[in-house]
Length: 342
Image 1 (cartoon, rainbow, N blue to C red):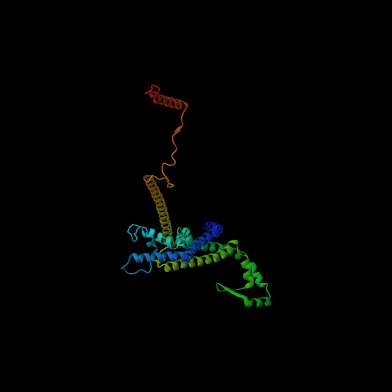
Image 2: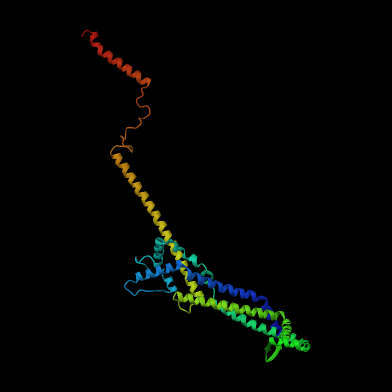
């Protein structure tokens, strides 16, 4: 149906730029992730440490020279040398002790987060094929429109050629163009090209833009394939599979780091409490020893500085009178034998 084809062509003309930009942005996200993963020095160092730990745990067996990204997810399940700590937690502790900068390796590859959600075959390659198919249909509409204009002006074009002088025709011979077995002079062809419809001009520009986008998308796919080869991965892996695995490892690594930091804080707190208990016990023991020796904290007599009870040593008037009377009676009794001449 010509009306439906025209409508579809107008719709494509309206949304072509947006859809093309979405394809480019999607491919760009994957390309950026490929570059970041391949160029991250900290990721390389961390993977080398993991490989070394794996070979040490596999002591006596054949030495491995590589491992798959999928095996990174098993580090949290396998146990390290003490058969208690997971290899992932041991890795975190080892890195924290020797090179803390590696703990932030994920900062180098943050671009994998958007890339892990991208289905490249559907969002890029399939969308490109769909656009190409729609553009082919649009080109047919543009050609039909152009043919109508050319047919309407064919009489004027013929008259224009017949109106040329011999010298003018001779001047055109160096610029002949053959189309569908018919030779045209450039002067006549330019007239027909100027009659192209807006939809026709759009089809030419859109086709060139689509070819450029296809080229970029294929180069990005080749770059991703190179990343798979670089890490020794299966060539059939898709970007969403590769980047989602790496992203899950980053999250597991962060969780292990959080666990290690919590455990370190717990041990540090327990160590402080233990030290406080020991110091308190030592102080109590010291005071007990001083008390047994009858000394105070300064080394003097423990009772030397004791304050007497309130009123101790103070003689009241009543007490003084009683003492005076008692003294007089004692004096009288002492002098009585002399008074009687005994």
